[in-house]
Length: 283
Ligand SMILES: NC(=O)c1ccc[n+]([C@@H]2O[C@H](COP(=O)([O-])OP(=O)(O)OC[C@H]3O[C@@H](n4cnc5c(N)ncnc54)[C@H](OP(=O)(O)O)[C@@H]3O)[C@@H](O)[C@H]2O)c1
View 1 (cartoon, protein in one colour):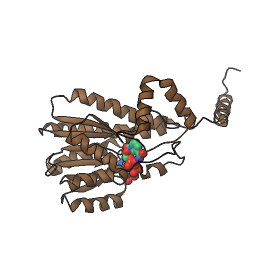
View 2: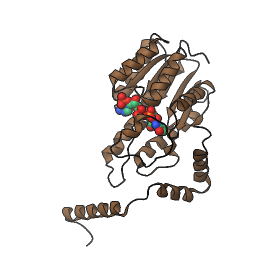
View 3: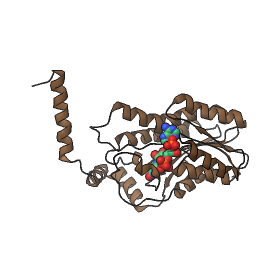
View 4: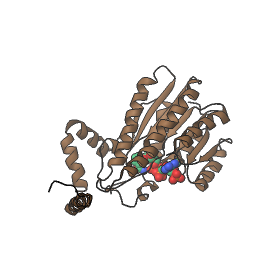
């Protein structure tokens, strides 16, 4: 694989996996366009990328907005005359009990974690078709395979991304565009501190470098799907349990963080207040 002369858009490049992936691509000679909302972090990344790939640049904006997501791709392709690699990595967490989740919460998570990848991918395909070969790598999550407690919306956004990517495997056949799915387990990045409520998970965290390696492997070997870490006994066991004994898997998840009785009572009381306030109800 020769990255020199190739152009890559990496979303969510201001921290964590995206930052490291953008740098790794630049170190291999790829011109990188890093995308996120925090400008100072992107400026710092870009100055590091430029030591290896001098045309590297960044774009600041909210990928939850369709116009910006499409602009990122179209502007990069126009500016550099090509788009070889798209890494859809931007993502936000949400750790909320289902009783507290609002439709706006779910819409926001779906827009950033899933729809942004759809918008960038659909915009990228025509540019990529003009090349003999191109790559789309979608960074999903192991949470799409086994829904952790209080992560219903996050799990849904990543499961949607998995389904979309699997569809791409079939639909892009013969085009020269390779779609790959990278499925990280728990990784040591700032994402764990970005939600008001902590995650239910409190086990080991793996370094972001293993996900970067998975992204590069996906590109270089045209792999359809890579779990990172690939040989973690916990993740392998969870995958098999989900496949063979899904009810045991569910039990494991509820042992991880049982739903406290008071959470259900509070939600039930709120439901009663709502019913009474609305003047309706069944008595
Ligand atoms: N860390 C893990 O354990 C883990 C596990 C499984 C999957 N993942 C997935 O891996 C990906 C990278 O996460 P990470 O762990 O590296 O976390 P991170 O350090 O928090 O990185 C998330 C990136 O997404 C960007 N982003 C968030 N909302 C955005 C928006 N509306 N518009 C543009 N950019 C936005 C953030 O930048 P700004 O805030 O500057 O916009 C940041 O660069 C995510 O999709 C995440 O779901 C992570």
